[in-house]
Image (spheres, rainbow, N blue to C red):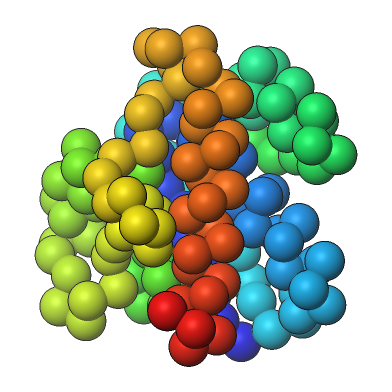
Length: 156
């Protein structure tokens, strides 16, 4: 089983969008039983005690436009132990990478990457929290997830 963890700052926009887009894609390909997929945050800003905030409504609405549900998802924080539990730890931007390295203590096995690195336009997924462009974030994340699947299938 391939274990994939998508990571952003708060785990209410980009990383849950990536989690549920990826789950939708692998389900449509009939390979969901070959994967374990989750998402988390590098910060605790969206987590209060043991309970995290749900997916931000505009992100949830953008997923819904594409027939994807994220019902029940709540923000959780990245833990150092996640490095040993996942095969791929995929960040949305360079700031996430910096914070991941701080939390994880580095990346000795080369498991950390950015989602857009799996596309023909590497870089950061712009944060829709600031731009309010959840449609653009969806497009980038969708493309990144398709590229990641191609990579995992040895197609790229």
